[in-house]
Length: 110
Image (cartoon, rainbow, N blue to C red):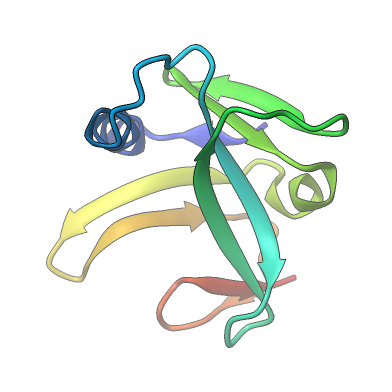
């Protein structure tokens, strides 16, 4: 399962409206893990409406999240959250599978 906090769900909804995505039943948030970043792996998020055969699909707090199977192995039980505080604004992942992460919070290692 991939979880979505209340704050992140609210922000995803706002971003979908700003992007003028009208068919929220067809579109979803695609989350993936890609190589790169100072710790070795980075998170990637996009709006998408095309599912692939091995995609894993979840829904939490009204947000449909889809990830490929390989990325899901790194994202099991991860929570997507959003911060609008003074120490940084944006989405971040609380990933129990990460052994370390970089100072900017955009990359991690397992």
